Image (cartoon, rainbow over all chains, first blue to last red; front, side, top):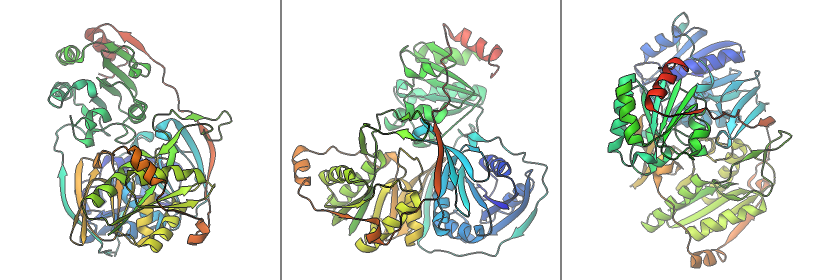
Length: 309
Length: 249
């Protein structure tokens, strides 16, 4: 039994989410092989080969995989994945984009956002925005899963010495093309990888007021997130959204500022180790999940917090 | 051009789901049902394409029990032209849904298929992509902007870290993200008019699909409850607790 993990990367470096997915693969049991598909991405394959627990790295280095377009990735993963018992990708916007295509081409179902491995055919995943936890058994010949990073520890990035094997594959579906990208530039850590996250909600009032959160974040190396209400109100871009329809985070410390605590938001952060809520409404539902609650006006409390740190 | 929109009947967004006492599934008895919010966005986008003169006809399809007609009627009231119900009482997995939709696509030959990126019950986020693979159509998932440009469809996608635009050959599939648009409400006259719009009912077998299942629910449990902690009276106490009690600073 061998498991194929599809690496998440930007052609230059291996993304941290892949390390969590490799841990999930190790829990299933069997040889763990990693596919790096991209363009000019040999360094990524070398990094993947060093990850503890990886037995082989497949490198599909070709211009058709540069942007990991779902059409080309789906075809490649379905073709290469035939000989494996399991195919895993991280539950990121890239993994969620191409993996269902590969599953359909293999004529199997897929399990999204797996948070725990019970056995080689039984997996745990949240449904209904995390209001219910389903244990699902699959009878498919090949199990295809996306892995939610918060459910698994990261595998050690060093310690392995897998071989890298080039895959001679370059099929361009020819139906889609990359046309542009606007990536948010930030020196702060990525939301899903940060050990501290500070998020603002509708209570922030406007986008400029997020500045006070950025100041706290920069002082302690935190990432900054937002509730859907703050995103919908246009305060901040959507890639900052934490919740059912945004990013799922589980940092050591999550600070919710001016966030009431709708279930859709809680779905994205309730696995955090310690939750702090700052809200002037003492009835706000966020206090029901917070380890430490401070009933205060955030415009007083946050600057005070910044100077106290 | 013809636009096909797929909609799903799910638990209402505002209802908190409860797990059955025997842990077999979520209890949907007497629970308010509605159109999946991402599907509402899909319908809205199709209607806007029609208002811009790009779409000539909007066909809305739903797969499910007879009562899913309600969600089709809602879409018709919002501006879709006709409906198709693929009636089945069985619980369907994504692959089967994609196969049924493929059958509908082959019959209707739409230039654009718009659907929600995920349903708020199973939270799978798979069906649009699977339909793409089965039909060979390209996809623009998690769309925040859709623009027809000649024979291409430019879709701006919400990705981790920002936005990405892809240019797709038509026919193509779009799955909607939250910021694509803000759905309108149906007016009373339009709700009345929708009752007279055509709605055809077919069975999965009519589309050549055999309903099969490869996933079984072992159990469904409520999530681990987080108990409320303590209230602190000042920022100073908070920082002290985080440093010395929780040790996370």
